[in-house]
Amino acid sequence: MLPFDPLQSRREALQAQHSVLIEKLSALRYDYGFSADTSVRFQLKKQIEQVEANLEASEQQLVSLERTSADGRLYQALLKLGYRKQVQMFRKFVENHPIAAFLIHGKEDHGQQWLLNRLVVQHTRDSITGKVVTVDLARVAHRNDVAALWRQLGRQVGLDRRRQCEVPAIVERVYQWWRTQNVLVIFYGVDFLPEAFLEELLRDFWTPLTAQTVGGVPAWEREGSDIGYKLLMFLVDQEGCVGDWSVPFAETLDSSWQPKMPVKLPVLSEFTENELASWLDFSADDLPLKLVEQMDELVQDILENSDNGTPEPTFEEICQRVGLSWVEAEKRWMKL
Image 1 (cartoon, rainbow, N blue to C red):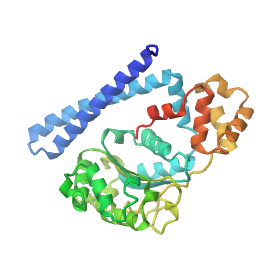
Image 2 (image 1 turned 180 degrees about the vertical axis):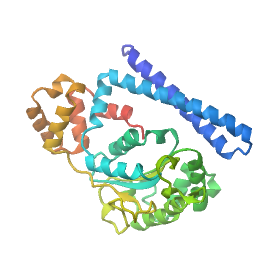
Image 3 (image 1 turned 90 degrees about the horizontal axis):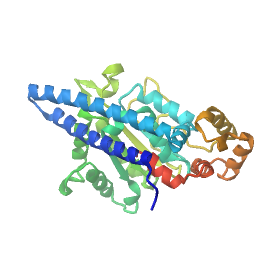
């Protein structure tokens, strides 16, 4: 029998409380969006504000608890390792627009899912408290019928079996969610799709969503404090091939960009010797002493044992050196 861990018990209790608050907030936002009675809407708005305050307090407690534990401090430090170009480009778009789609791409084991979680947790954290739709495209890849893609997406947005292939119904369901809360739509394994299927997904699902208006104004044109809720889509490519397809992607933010065109973040690459050395130096106060002693030798050891800085083997090597299992830590740390 494992010894009782009060810190872990406290963490689990807070996480359970946090999950209940998220569910309650989602239900209140739904009711608020579809209630026509002014007095009812007023009461719902007050309840939403209270639950949002409780949720923020719960989140701060979780963050504070994480920072008191050794593995929590390591997690916070790892969130600062690498991916600088991808993070900078993502922030440019999401800080100026409420709607955007992003391609995360690179070779196998380059931390695509880790980066997705990092972008959301660090820069659009409120979106986790809204609707999150995830689709594993590997499940439909062996079929040559695009209807399998729509069925999978329709199922994930909660349509009944008879309507799961009705693309307008899927678009309407996601749009209605977006009216009252943040929405994340995540497609894992987009590299499994035929290129034509991805083009159809963007044309028939994403483009109609980006065409929606708020108060008669296109949502993507609403700036500053009037942006409202976020609607973000992520296309996760585990093989690094989608970026070479003929599908049009944006790579810079300029006045001509519109959100119907997905953004291709810079391709993921290996961590360099300088990146690792700078990270160890910058994060020294939050890392176990064994990781910051003899830094030069440690950087070389990590590179040699991680396929020359491949991200996921790098994370595994760092965790192993402080007595943590990367597989188990990943399960705790990943929110998506």
